[in-house]
Image (cartoon, rainbow over all chains, first blue to last red; front, side, top):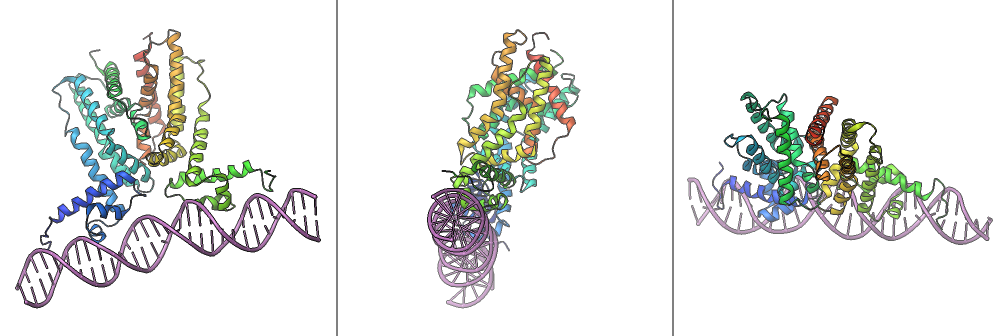
Length: 206
Length: 206
DNA sequence: ATGATAGGGTACGGCACAGTACCATAGATG
DNA sequence: CATCTATGGTACTGTGCCGTACCCTATCAT
């Protein structure tokens, strides 16, 4: 079965629908988005959509997973330590913010937040794959620096959370609420301050 | 005109509807909430609701304003400086978190975030009256401490943002996404760490 | 060529909801 | 007692949308 169809494999077909779903859910959120709109953009018919996805909720879950992928890939698989503590932290913070403040990320954040009471597992997944993954990555790096004697941190995970909290500062919340997006200067300031403070607190050399 | 009606003044009537609206919007968010549900809880009829509020959106705006009031009053009008820098910061962080992590606050945060692309002025208002107000209050206090020679901070507003960012850490985001609410221990840890770091960075005595 | 199958197009059932219209009633006014 | 006004109750209109059913075409196997 699964004989090849003309315009593309089943996988490609599914991806087209998924991409359209991403656009629509980003634009309208979950409740206000309509499956018909997805069909309109993807081409084809509802029948096909419901062939690949159980229902609207299932499509939304797939969309969220897809966006998490898109979001996290530029952050790289692992933190390397070629450039020293300061630059590593600074670099990580920069990537983190640039991802978090993209239009896509903000839009999907809004959509997931809106539905996280109705679909709790969705909010959980989004956190784990997005901000939570970043925390774990940094925490792992900090533990390594602990072992190397560069840092002295008791609870590396809490420290990582706090670092990202400092980096985010108000920037993310303000962007989420639609206040004007921060400029490069704001980002730079927030990151460099966070790094300074973090190092002053934890670096054994200081 | 506006002759007295039986069960209460017009103001009271409006307040009852508003209170019902708060409950319903908190429970369902904006889009999924229905005006009929508000009517059911407030008693009376749709006609009366639409007498006091232009439409669903207007009711929602009033609800958000009402909740902002409810939220911010326990934070008190002004920061006093009776207890020294450490205790003042610690106290402020505690109040801040306890407000931010209330069920009500989380629910209305979700609802406002969800609609902030459709109703940008709403998101803006919510931020200004909520987290933004806290930032301004702290910033003012920090400036005062600057003048008194206790602190040495160039940009007090940024410092205030960063302080709250540290205090929030991941706690708020995780709560928003419906991961389990942080325990008292988590709050204490986040706050005390934030205060320590902040003072170590900015206090002239250190 | 003939049959089978997947998928595009469309329409529909069922439901929910925003906002309005209408009627009956309870109190206020004279 | 008579009239008027405001409001509760309810039905209605118009709209939108999820999920399914049906028809028809285009491709593939034999």
